[in-house]
Amino acid sequence: MVDKNTSISDKNSKDFLSAAGYSEWRAKKLQQASELAKETLIIPIEDIANLKPNESEEICNRCDISNAVLYRDMAHETAPERISSRLRQFADSLGLRIAEKHRSAGNDGIVSLQESESAGKKGYIPYSKRPINWHTDGYYNGPDQKIRAMVLHCARAAESGGKNQLLDPEIAYIRLRDANPDYITALSHPQAMTIPENDEGNGKIRPVSIGPVFAIDPQTGKLEMRYTARTRSIAWREDAITAEAVAFLTELLASDEPFIQTIHMQSGVGVLCNNSLHNRTGFDANMTKPSERLMMRVRFHNRVQGK
Image 1 (cartoon, rainbow, N blue to C red):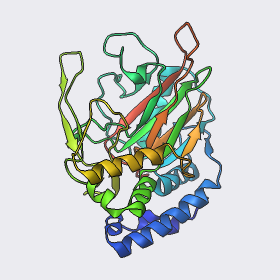
Image 2: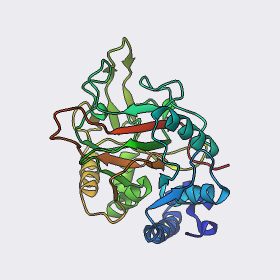
Image 3: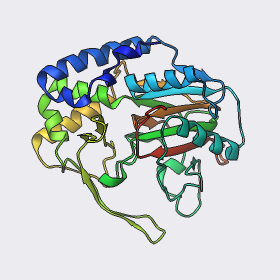
Image 4: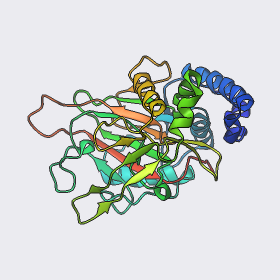
């Protein structure tokens, strides 16, 4: 277990905006990320609905260092309704008390992600077998509806495929800034990325979303990222340095970056993250029947804080 006493979260993240502060923050970040990479990828949790103090500490510590933790619920609950209740208890115990009001969520705020032909879901990639490109969740939301944390839990795995990759947004920031500090300036512009309005098919129109890729949360001083690798229904600010920055980030996410984590989540395994970059490969492509794969997701407007 990495020593939390030296965590980069002990220092206000706003300090890394200066050259001197960035150098110190960067060194600590990469050191701790390297140490954490030597640890077991998935940590066992005896019962996610009733975290023990040492389990909560380990979860919060990993989120402090890498903005994500992969866990396995050893209770082996399989009933979706029971998983929903347990996920909310899990999130509540970690300070995640502001659930997003998603149009496909149940009363408990949990969204079931599985192949579906139903109205309101058909045509949307999360409800299909198709791969999902790199993104952070809620990149289409307005500034007052930012997604800052998420739990994604596997209730039933795919028969084949369905792998996920994760990358800490702070690592992406470091790679971009090291390559060219102007990339960060461009991607921090308030009009860097625009997602046009969308007719959600239920009588509601999701409004246009305009904002930066990188921003500092004024309440916590933490770095936040808003990004999608989609190439349609998106507009980037029209200047050369923004185009270069986007191209660099695209190449980074397709590279063998050592801090990209790859996992094929099985039943009972999940990820809790401060809205890390993530993707998903396609799954069960050769099946003629609907896939049994079921992922359960709940998203929040605040970060993992602990008790």
